[in-house]
Image (cartoon, rainbow, N blue to C red; front, side):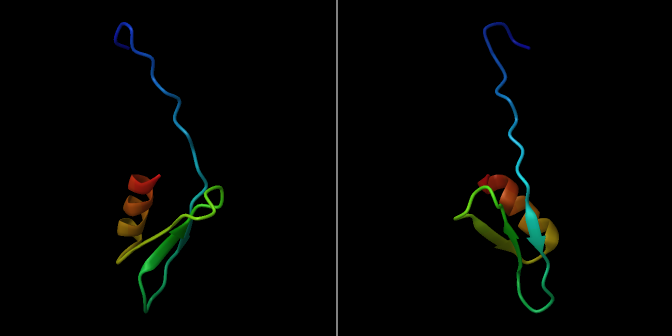
Length: 53
């Protein structure tokens, strides 16, 4: 750790991933009620969720 620098604790969220065959996969975060994101693939949906959180 760098002197004079305190790391912020990492927050953890439960993420619900809904893969769909005919449409984009989407992600909900129950503790963030207005939050919804989606992606063309499961991996993309997860990445979009991580960036948004």
